[in-house]
Length: 105
Image 1 (cartoon, helix red, strand yellow):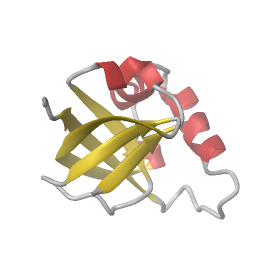
Image 2: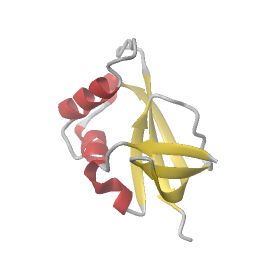
Image 3: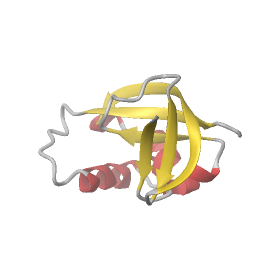
Image 4: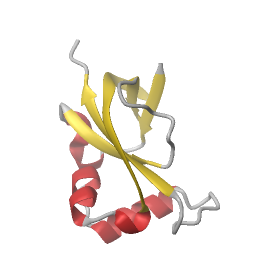
């Protein structure tokens, strides 16, 4: 089973039945079942419901507040800080915005 790891429960999203995540990876597909972890602990299983693709400049307040709880500039800063050790061209780097739904056991 694929895993989506969170280092922090941004905007308390993991407490919700459905939530989003911004990733640089396209490895998750719609309908994939994934294991959600936070700080290396298994939290729950979930299903990828939808996915949108865009570049950093397309992040707006709607996306930013929903995903992180911060405005668009701070959200962009968070992403750039998280991936600061990678050689990324933020003008062309694709960002994958996943919509995820908890699977109720």
